[in-house]
View (tube, rainbow, N blue to C red):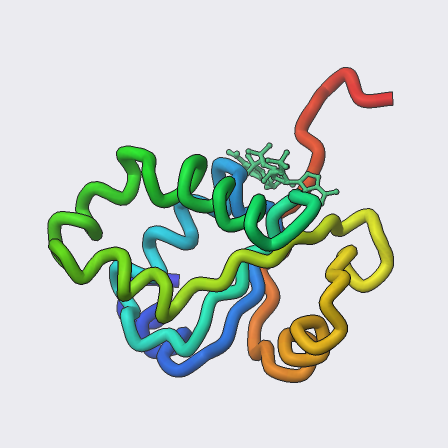
Length: 129
Ligand SMILES: NC(=O)c1ccc[n+]([C@@H]2O[C@H](COP(=O)([O-])OP(=O)(O)OC[C@H]3O[C@@H](n4cnc5c(N)ncnc54)[C@H](OP(=O)(O)O)[C@@H]3O)[C@@H](O)[C@H]2O)c1
């Protein structure tokens, strides 16, 4: 997909991304937010025991890294409000039924509302049992 196609495709879409703290998904999230600010919503599934901890991981491991410096520079002081409008951190685990999402209302909202699922959660350890 070239950038033009990606821009058109993701306009107005609601997207769920798994593995959001991982290498590939971070690059995807940054690119989408930079080239298509009119994306409807990005739900990012993150391993954490509750939504506050998921949000904390999202800030520390995703948005506060150097990868986002171009978007930060582009949006300036609007960066945080843009992110909170577009991005929702979801506490979950893909190895658990229904992605381990405990909040029923949120789970239904996500499962009924998403247009695209980007599944990037994986174990990449070569010595996994
Ligand atoms: N990196 C590459 O160059 C490359 C190239 C081609 C294909 N791929 C494939 O793309 C996928 C992602 O690769 P990556 O390099 O981004 O891997 P990565 O950096 O190791 O990221 C893996 C992500 O999956 C999450 N995760 C693992 N188990 C999970 C679970 N049970 N529930 C929810 N999240 C879970 C991890 O979360 P935690 O932070 O909580 O551990 C992390 O966010 C893999 O399938 C890989 O084989 C990667």
